[in-house]
Length: 240
Image (tube, rainbow, N blue to C red; front, side, top):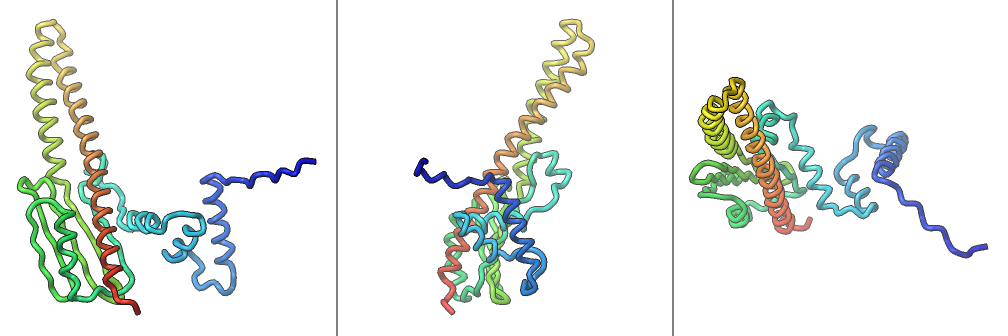
């Protein structure tokens, strides 16, 4: 007989999800369970820690879920949401006198000229680039035993610049300016319609691909800024 110990079985991602879901159902069925449905973020972090998942990544995933909304018609056409919203709640109240300590971090993580204003226990930062391609607002509010960090960024200027510039300049100019005369020269009547349509469709797909990539990078940047602010807030909150 072989003395080799068989390697432990490794479960796939799908199996892990099914196991965790079933274990949750079994736990919630216990009479002592405080809540029959759902899991709190603390409970999810405990599961993640046991599974070897970084709790910070779990919090980021929860942040994305909380701020995710059904895609609007404009977002579907553009390929990504026109407005980015990222929110994080930190347990504990940041001392009011420490709100201003967040301004350098916010200033370094946003673009253009910005202004800060503090009203009561709320700090608000608003900034915009010279061309208004990016407009950003960061809010930090202390209330009810927690500190709320929220960032919003409008990509309306970026979308208008990309779609208007590429489709109007490349699609319209090339399609109608070159396609029409070329089709007439070749004696292709259908080209009078086909060339502009192809040019406009291609320029739209190009603008959509560029905007999607830019929006993804802007969202990652917003998540990183909110994460850094949350870490700074957590360090500044006094121990109970």
